[in-house]
Length: 345
Figure 1: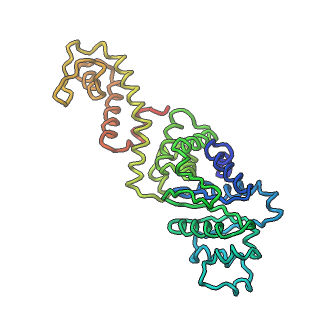
Figure 2: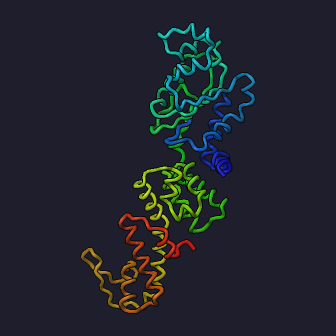
Figure 3: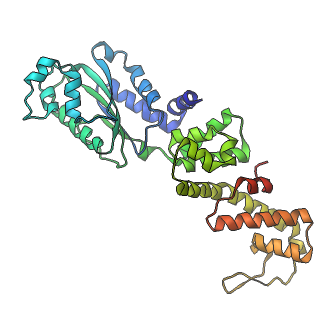
């Protein structure tokens, strides 16, 4: 499932596939590229495969090298010198100048013949790698290495003129992209309709709209609907207080509209039985005089106190009243209550 959804994301999602194509074209043209994401890059291993797949012609003259610097304690310049220079070339390096400038001025060092994919760039290392690579490219001649910097960076940074392309997933991708990939997961699991919409919103909200963790949550299917906090804790290990708010936000987007539809339905069913001279305090110093202005609590009270509806409808209105009240007080509705309401049948 993970590889299938990752393939769908990078090959078929409009925004993601456009970003990938632009990165591929940049590398194939002999220029460097930065891919920046505010969180972990979605399906990063597959992204690297897709980035390097069309480089066949360039690889005839250049060597592909992948670096994972997520646990690196070395500076970017030191890492490049350590990786690409021979021992005698390292011996000739004098620390009075930056390592990247030394390598730029010595095209016999193998970096000049490399396409370098750098993964795991995070936090302060983002600025350091940008500075190092732009400095290297500015000092190098026609023969130089090509870089793809994959950065997990909370700050959006301006394009540096010496970099070939700067692609910002945080800017270009939207919440809708994450919702769409969750819908694709649920289609694979044959979950549709209101339940699919609810699980989609839950997964996206709990994951903070990060595509890959959202898809992982959506792949849990109805288990996520039944126990969103427990499922999120098992998969994401996130803060419970924040996740509780995320569930509430998902329910505001999905449950609240359904409750409103049902309110309208009960008004149509029983509105003609309500007193013609309605005068119900609205809590703001005025009065409700039109049936269409009645909230669920008012409909429930009129039907219950005046015997205007059968017991099944009065009980359902009571459950709706409780659900609407919970959401109004920022409390997520537990699954048993949603199940009793029958909102996702």
